[in-house]
Length: 54
Image (cartoon, rainbow, N blue to C red; front, side, top):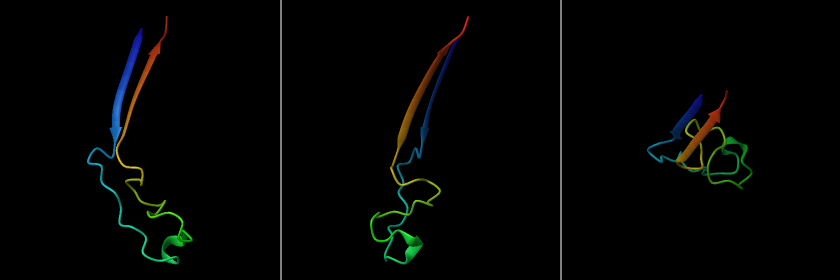
């Protein structure tokens, strides 16, 4: 049996609001986006998976 899966996360390639200060969400001024953003901060992500069993 061959199983194939494909998908996409954040299909609209939407980014969260940028962090505006060091105290905002405790990023220490390193990352421009919050790590707690529900749609992520890496943009669109495609993936594919294949599996075979007999």
